[in-house]
Length: 130
Image 1 (cartoon, one colour):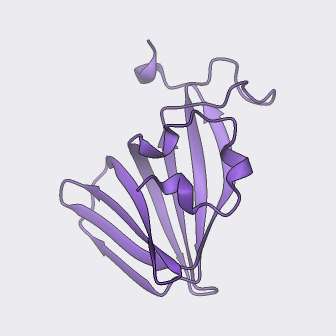
Image 2 (tube, rainbow, N blue to C red):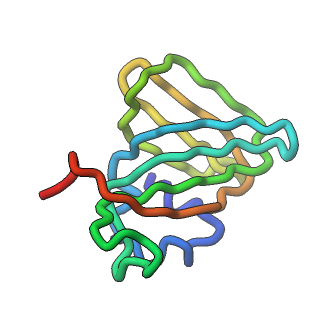
């Protein structure tokens, strides 16, 4: 299921294309915090808001998001790679969300009670140009 359905602050994604949650993500970082406990995921998508925020580069063609998962009750990570572009999915499960990211031999899975967008930023990636 599209990860955007789990976000508790969907207004932060309102200007992104409606298919953003179905697009592959490029996962950069996973941060575990014992407080909460929470997990932060930092990743890029090949979509940008329309209109572009005024503080963004006018040529931005990628959006970097940071999602925070609060009340994490399970976490597994298997495999690792220097490039991780794959699908992020979130499914409802017993009053929580099952989060999964898969690409090749890398599998990240967690269960969380809440998902929030913490930040959005845009940049220009010449590899993504037309």
